[in-house]
Length: 212
Figure (cartoon, rainbow, N blue to C red):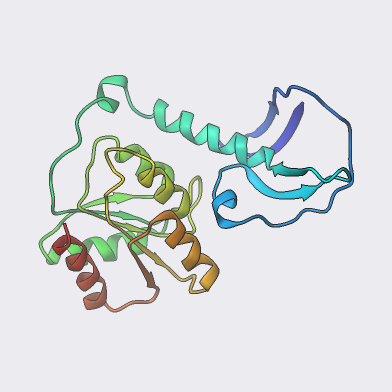
């Protein structure tokens, strides 16, 4: 099955072939939402009920392709010997993941003044690549970012045996219950709404460190 997608991670148009067992042709369906356990699975966009009563999941082909491309990009970004290197045991390192350079620099200065070592990631893919060699004590994570968003990064962390206990503070302008619930389902520790007070952020970070 041939799929034509828009711009990918490299900025170029992509033509992708998906291998499937059988093609049954086109069908008109009514897409229905699925529960949080199923919707959290990468590449599942919903479900439907066929005329014979069978329940069928609806796959999002672009999401499947993009997810695989991200994994390949992370693996290719690091030489094998680096990817296999043990993570640092530094407990006072804070990773700041945000696509805004202004937010990254302001947060870096704040944490630096408070005595922390700061690691910056410009987006989700950059964060996942750096986590192969960094073991921060706390991660400050934005939601809306290119290449890989905050939910994808948080899911990556929680599914990684060496990183799954890493405290995550999600910092975002998204205040709706929908985003909060998704963060809770993934296992995000704290949810902070922008704009925030500097002392509020430092208090959240210190609480996470005290809990380790």
